[in-house]
Length: 89
Image 1 (cartoon, rainbow, N blue to C red):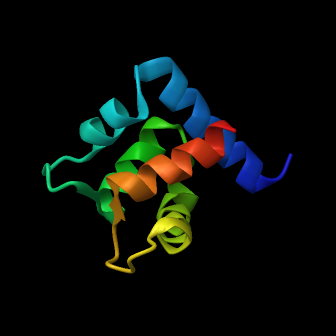
Image 2: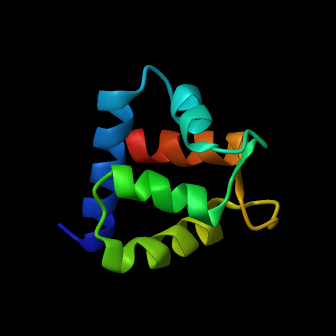
């Protein structure tokens, strides 16, 4: 299994075990309630998913690059939902 697959699998486990819906997960990690996940908030999500501290920052940047369709430097609810749908499928 590649590193990417391991990371996505850990995120999937976090989402399915701890939250009733992706929306509840998003709200939980959106610390300031602005409707977007910042790099710091994504790092917290990755920490809860037990992603190694050594690579957490790099993974957060890569996730933002991959899913931030409006290029505002954060992940909105619709972008997050797209990412989670992709991970769960």
